[in-house]
Image (cartoon, rainbow, N blue to C red; front, top):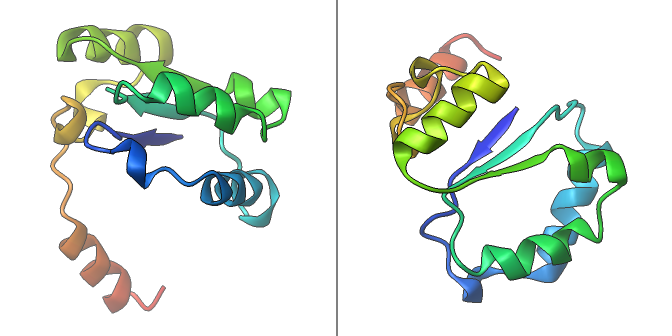
Length: 114
């Protein structure tokens, strides 16, 4: 499951070629199985960009994209009821309670030699 928060993204940052490469990577080049791609609080231009990006996706991948908009309570409720993802599992940036510490994660991964 991938959860993205593009709320501060700007339309000028969108590049169709990069989007196409990202989709190609997600559907075959990376050794992962993406079961869902959740976008939380997308910016207004997402209504234009997402249909363009979906053109490059298979039907299967298109069905895995979930867009969550509205207030934090509504989004948290939707995650809980539809997907079984509680606020404890979601990062604080999307309204959850999980505190992400990227530096600590990198340090842990480096020390375990993974």
